[in-house]
Length: 264
Image (cartoon, rainbow, N blue to C red; front, side, top):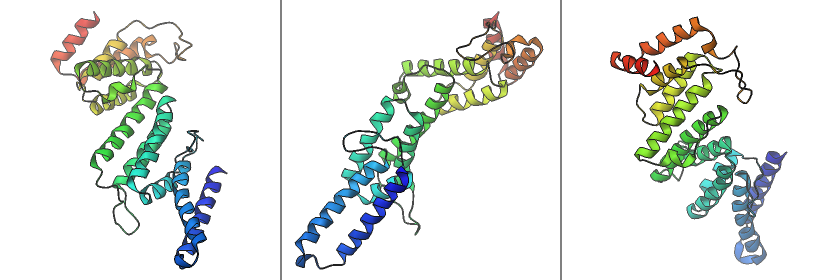
């Protein structure tokens, strides 16, 4: 209902504005005022389509198509202000799906094209486009970490220092240890390897951490994570041995020796 209402308002505003533009403005000052009001409504509709309001209230509904339409037709300064105002609420509530949607809208305004093939007007905002792409990537991984009960600080993902790298390794390790109690080992290895690749971690780190997990002592039922004897592979020695051999096969010999000595 929200989306339908928003689209009807947009359509009616466009119709009225087109009628006004076809009339001689000098003859009707009232129409000039009406035109100005309708143009201001574009900003309001842009805010609404991004799920927000002038008062800062978030509706929870985002219409990506309308948001893109309004943003690219507004003056850049006004459009950026409206777009940036939509992000803090989503970040504050750690609504990662919403952040991903907003970041995707921003990126598309820079790399998308009209039906004619002409690029959208934000295509020269290179830094902004890269920031949106980075936010897309981060929000996807924030969602993955959140689903697997990994505690993390979003600001770490935009830092570039040794401390940030250590924290990212910790997040990767926690992801492995939490996910491996309920997911297939190969799935966990692929997932953690993608995380390591995305953030420039050592390429053998995921396999090494997974071996450490597999050779650790399993815990009793953990109701907070929903893991139990049936889902935790470590309760099955035969499957555990097979999984360890698989992980080791992806490691250089020197790393195989290091991790096995560490687990003794």
